[in-house]
Image 1 (cartoon, rainbow, N blue to C red):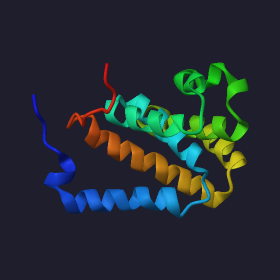
Image 2 (cartoon, helix red, strand yellow; image 1 turned 180 degrees about the horizontal axis):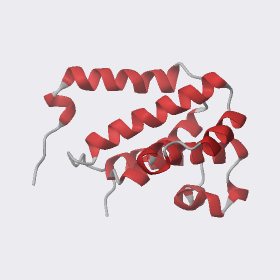
Image 3 (tube, rainbow, N blue to C red; image 1 turned 30 degrees about the vertical axis):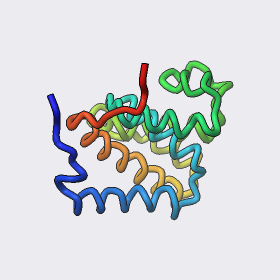
Length: 148
C-alpha cells in the first residue's frame, strides 16, 4: 500500500524537523561519525528501515562494515567501540526507551561523566530528533535505497 510522503504533505513541519537535524550536524561539537552511529542505533531500536539504510550508508564512508553490523550488540563487543561511542550508544538506548527506563539516575550519571554538559544536551537533542524522524519514517514507510 502506498503511503503519504510526510515531508511533501507537511512541508513546514518537515522544515522545522530538518532544522533540528541541521543544528545537530552543523552546530554541535559532536563528531559526525558519532552522530550517525547514534542515529543508526536509535533507528534500529525503532524499526525504521529507511533510516537504518540511510545511516548505515553514511557510516560506511568512515566505519568498517563489520563494526556497523555489530552496532545492535555493541555492549557485547566493547573492544570495537570507543568509550565515548559506548557512552553515546548507552544514552541513546536509555533515551529512546524512556517509557521503560525513565532515564535512570545511573544512566544519567554515566552519560554526564562521559560528556560535557553542552555535548550531553546536544547528544540528547540528536537522539530526540532521530526518534521524531523514525516516528515519521516507519509509519509512512519511506523507501530504502538498498536493492537485491
